[in-house]
Length: 566
Image (tube, rainbow, N blue to C red; front, side, top):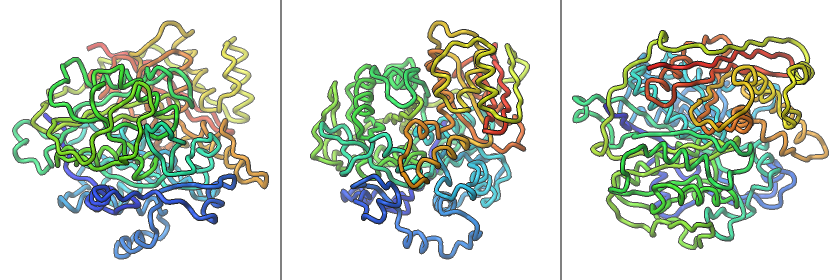
């Protein structure tokens, strides 16, 4: 059995198809531009210069002209539809089949809408699936900047567990004052075009894009008949730094662990390829990646950073860059990147030589994000690896070790603070947390007890229907008022997965965490199917499953500690 790539699309400022993007990159064309003063003031009133990568609305309107989409669809939703449509049409694929699952990854979704009109993230996922006639409940992943790669890993596990035959994976985010001002508040934006890993790097540029990757499970007897492009998803791993919610680990611990888990126990020194790093061009991220790579078994591989073409496209980033790397691997040719890069990280990494022809079997994609989350993905040519069939796990094999339930209507902050005192929890950072993280910490104290030795076995699967809406609204207040001053302390909590990061820090957990967003009306069956796939694929035998719905007005936490005995 193999999980093969059937088709893909990249919709970005340098092309509305994958072919157009590859052609632009081959010519050295970047989508990054210095914004005019009017646009700068729209995005971040305190910035003097902003380089960003924006999709041309005129070209987008022309591409959408004959699609007859509903008038109430948002700009992001239209881009997503266009991307999926292109990917499916090129292989004449019917996406309505019940064995096909849609998986959407996004950091902030339709956050560019005004607060009163803001749509829940899950609504976008359902809309897109229904427009293609697919009646399955889609997955929506919001795991900060690693969301796109996490979506690929989730798809692989679902397909390997034989829950579905095919997966349509989508990553998408668009630029907005919310996002630009937030990164600006961290002083993370470069006033010039970004230069990943350069000794004079000044920070990141932001961009917008949508990417689609269609995968299919192919059994041994079907491999010669597959319509794919001869590339498969070999393995993936997710881990946490257990260090800091907004600063990378100084030792690269979480990313190092993700790389080693992804590579597995086998010798990986044959037919070496390349590394596509996260490479944001911030001082600390690039340094952390250099350390993590140098500690791992892929220390000798050259790196191919791509953000000088797109900027950081958030939830689309990992998926977009994986698709590009897939085509570089398939074609045996790596493009010209900025030849003026002067490596300035320690230990120094090797940039792949300009426009080099090569022949290798695989590459590895790395991503990192707020909350200390990290992921690694190994992708190879179809002939290089064949996976054993994974048996489904029966619920009767799963034990419920502990359970915690908490419901409350009213002032959530006051109630959580009262619980914290009543339970004699000692963790001073509690009072700086957002509501989601406070609720999660109280639930984990009940399930896991007091923090003890480090843990890299426990996986955290969190979900809710409102993502980080309470924190989003609080952050909006800091950029809406006349005395414009975005709050970095609030912005970092506008990611629901930060709650998992806080738990990993508290309990020194280096295992993986994932945050799903799903409608309140949907039952837990789909999330439980994913938990069972973790057991079936041998990822872990211990999972914390937590519905973590905490807003200003309501607390609904249902947490379970599950254990699988094979």
